[in-house]
Image 1: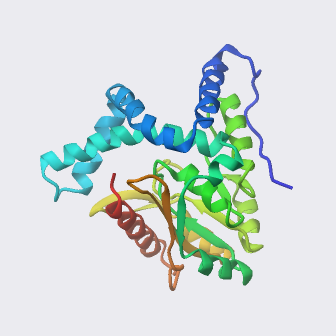
Image 2: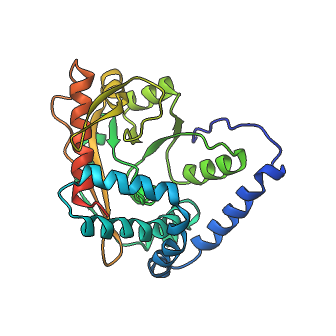
Length: 286
């Protein structure tokens, strides 16, 4: 039986939740579109939304300048514009991942690398901690991988209870379990029992144990949770890289397990995880 978690209590039809209902309705409608249509419509939606995303646009420009200083100003601007187009595709990919039918998702072109090795690890009874980044198509990549192996996820609760409950139920349609970030004991039990877990350590939530380690040569506050989860559960750590292909479809690469991980030093281990994420970004920055 799939594990369900609590959400904040508030009347479902409270006026504060009306925007969530409207947004969910739009996502349901978008999820009904054929995948080739999504690829055509997405960039146009991105072009419309990008000028309105002032704060996110400034953050993206700053991150590009910090992480890829070898690019000249024109190249950085091209990459920034690509992020705008990606915003529209991201919205449609979220819609498909959450509310698309099994038939629609099964029709999405996808190739895998390292899947047989992961299946062998699962057959041996080892828990697997998939480590990836908050890339725009992460939800769809997770659902595509969940078609091949049981896959659980870790998430942060949404402020709106209507949106939270709807997305949680959508994820539980394809995920074997979902854990909040504060549910350490259930998460460890799941991994110790040979389960899998997708986890992204690339955001600083200002809570939990973190260290300052290099990311693109810049000291960044990074959670040490990957080190802690591996140390306490005995799970192997596998890099989970997913890339949207130029012609449509996706390539999902499951890297070999990190060797000699974890160590006794959380800073050393977290540096290795950041290096893994940095390699993912450099391979497909747009």
